[in-house]
Length: 568
Image (tube, rainbow, N blue to C red; front, side, top):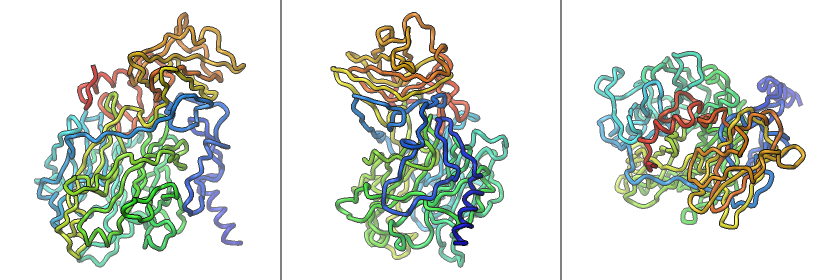
């Protein structure tokens, strides 16, 4: 009894015992974060039920229709999409002496590292592991495709950074929201569980900050955590989230590898967690299908996330097997693949779409045969496109050393890209007979309605505004809307005789979209005709000046020359 009282008090103190309202209107419970049971069930989604607000504020970002949060009714068909791997992959492969590794196991993989657009310098930047279980390194690119390894002053003649720490799990984060220039970059870096010749077992990580992403502060040792732990920033709540893999033997857990949750408003201070006070967060569940050829129970290998527009976006890394011992005997990488997940409170993840988002190719000769992983920042935004950098390993069947570090299972780590339409995770589609989607009550302060829609040719989209009485607002009826027939990720809808939506600002209204022969991906209410969303822009991209879309159409103009699939 005494222990349960102490636990309750500690939870209240940790949460501050005060209700928190998010920008989407979701009110978090007084005790936060939650304390879910460790089991094999899918996560509950309270923000789609008892936590969903009666009226949803939509001022913060593009409103993605990935779940039912915004949808009251729909006759449209929901379709989930995946990115396309580019045909010039990988964009970074091991080439330098540093990338050959100390064990003769080459690698140039961002594991988890990070790929970011840095508006301060107008270039893409990558932090990655050079060689297997070796050192962190740094690369830059003017176009996000061709990468240069600058010679730095850390270890002269190389692009190595943080030479005193052997790299295994890492995340580098470009913090647009700090008011401390010397902490503009954050890094979490964990060494392997053990290093040959060392008597120390590395059950902890290190947190560091930097003004330039190259020269780093003295590391602050973290609390205990398992390997493949990562971090990300949740700007909706202004907290750093430490996504920690359970430490110890995963076979002692009923669900194998899973994640523990820790959060802190201060990145460096948050490093000092007590492992025994961490609570279970999430793992794989019974809806994760086992690989039919391997047969092992799926496990959650990693969960990295990023703020994208009005949601938190994650790419859960699902481990399908085989076990490390089997891979070691065969010299092949284990099969991990990336799925997709969405959250509106930063803790509970909607994994309705279980198809592989970025798959392992699985066949000999493929650079991403297995061990596919995400990178810090998850994706960059390049005009009409989202670029997902990811890593994979080719393996080498003829290297079957009993020394873990020299085995072929981790041979050939490289970094590649996959591309998809901006906001293109889920579409709601209609054929020639048409269909409608009605939103739940929303409230906004903006003036201009924008949509991301593909209804080019014979298709069209129009909308009407529904008032609190359930009837169309005069002047905003469907027959007064100027229909669009276009394929655009930033298209404005308007009504005849109405300059904008300003007269409806602050009111609870619903939007009824009417669509034929097309697909609707998102909508948003912008403060100007430039179409800026004021949402979060993940790892950024050409044309953006910070972590929020304040540019709208202007960013598209800058990004046009960068796009993989350049549009007219």
